[in-house]
Length: 232
Image 1 (cartoon, helix red, strand yellow):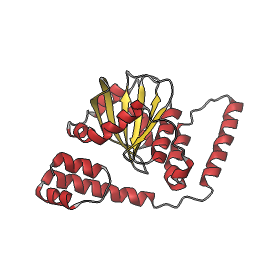
Image 2 (cartoon, helix red, strand yellow):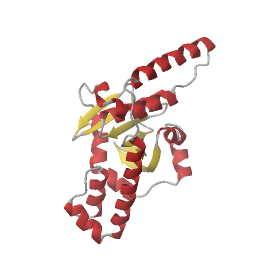
Image 3 (tube, one colour):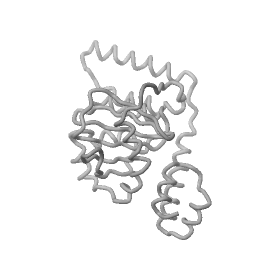
Image 4 (tube, one colour):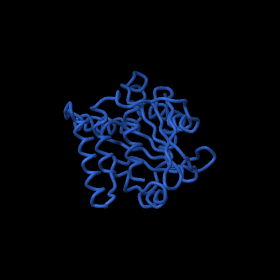
């Protein structure tokens, strides 16, 4: 096992194998990465150890309806981004059964999954963009500030994708890690979905271009996609 194989295996979230352990013990760089990932996973699990009330979904939906009614009367037309993010935060505890994944797998969504499976580790190893540069690059399509309201941005970097330049974003949300592929030059008219190799992808249009959301849980992918769409 080499460094690339180790990083790819580590990002899947599976338990450390014997081959990974042998490599880690002989590689100071991968050992540091393993310690960082282990510490982050522990903090993430601690933050998730909050029981979700049985009636959480019903109460949240009722609250949103009430807020929409008030907004309609007052004519404020306020954004529902934070409400959608709250739904996303509770999605994991509510259960994946609330999210239906159906229809024919879309080629673009499948390409997003293939990128995560085959190219994500290489993209991360190429290095991230400086924060200011990333903010400028994403401003027209998906402002970095919006991503910060959903989760912790771990990596932003340009990458070749589907014959154009996309921006590869690794985003940690309370439930899991998701990958975003922001495509400023690829415009969609409707959302597209796919699932393959235990991964799920949802691609949706932005005000400029589109974004693919990829993760290991359909519920998490849908909640993040919903939060992104609500802020469009």
